[in-house]
Image (cartoon, rainbow, N blue to C red):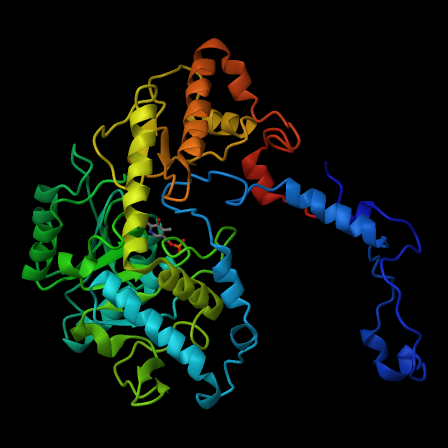
Amino acid sequence: MGTTIFDIGAEGRTGLRLPPCDIPERNLTELVPAELIRKEDPKLPQVSQIEVVRHYTRLSRMNYGVDNGIYPLGSCTMKYNPRINEDMARLAGFAYAHPLQGEELSQGALRLMYELGEYLCAIGGMDAITLQPAAGAHGELTGMLIIKKHFERAKELHKRTKILLPDSAHGTNPASAAMCGFEIVPIPSDSRGLVDLQSLKAHLDESVAGIMLTNPNTLGLFETDILEITKLIHDVGGLVYYDGANLNAIVGRARPGDMGVDIVHYNLHKTFSTPHGGGGPGAGPVAVIKKLEPYLPVPRIIKRKNSYALDYDRPHSIGKIHSFYGNFGVLVRAYTYIRMMGDEGLKAVSTNAVLNANYLRARLSRVYKAPYDRLCMHEFVLTTKGMSEEIRTLDVAKRLIDYGVHPSSIYFPLIVPEVMMIEPTETVSKEELDRFADALIKVAQEMKENPQILKEAPHAVPIYGASVRRLDEVRAAKEPILRG
Ligand SMILES: *Cc1c(COP(=O)(O)O)cnc(C)c1O
């Protein structure tokens, strides 16, 4: 533990042999201005090949990822990423395409993006799309800019100042709306865990620019009043933004467009199985209904008779939201995934994601408390509140690491105290679900019999569990020591 590449090796050791130099040697001072020449040796690691290989292999074993086992982070949809997606993204024609090589030489890439857009529109029941945003949050920002532009053109922006936001919303929602200058109006959840209709109605007037709605919401519950909600918002002239991060629960079965939604973002790195974690890259395409199409970012990818082209001539566009066309490699992976799955495959995704979540919920709600104990969608929440005087959900999550499984999301959504938010996804087998449930049930027993073991978890068990003991998380984030 604690060994960096700078701590190993020895003076003069090297991992490769260069061929003899076949050009005349020149003195550095002849080539580089004196003030740019480093005075001191950069102290690079001096290591043999096998030392490098062993060092990075050891580091990779300290990591835990989707390829190791269940990764049930609620709201994150950490599903398996089929290897064929990677193979396609690595095809030379895609991997080495240059964004400035011109339309003529980019027909394959343009076609792929055009067709991906068509598929996503069909899946969402929407009319037009941009693939540019690099993440869900970036899609939200794009959507809010579109709402702003819409009211600017309607000369109503001065009075359309509010965005309504259910209190279960992901933190990026209020941030995106606030960045566009809107005032955030929180709408409480009712005892069902759904948008409280009475409170919503109390806020409806011509100051409402729109609502940002996540469905199913972050409690894993389907907003059963969605048709009424979208109608109420439209009746006062507002627009409905749909946070599609939870599309895995409904893909192939229900469409935001049919729920009366005006704008929706998709998280390709969640629902459409492109690797994510550690900050990206991702993709958060935004689809809109026909009347909002003029505001989409430029360039739009259009289909001509026998070719595809980029259209910059969009006077009402909100402009560019990403360099070039977005994170193209992610788009190739999502396209491959959709083509490989097909209609039936995508339907099976949501079916099995919901089945897996309900299986875990049924097993675990006998031991932990389920604040909303009824059928869930692709995820559900549990709480440890009231189970122990001294043990918190954080301790439960840390103890799970000792059992070799990744903990769920914790302390989100904010409206449930001491919450665990569990999303197994469809790519987890029944055995793996049981392994996770068994571990959580064991930890609940330990909570009563040996709480100290939870408080000190994880207990650095190399290979099997963690490679370090419990960290001071704030200090680890604020004072990271990344090299020796
Ligand atoms: C993940 C998520 C987001 C943000 O998406 P990113 O791609 O991480 O920016 C927004 N809303 C919900 C409900 C999410 O789960």
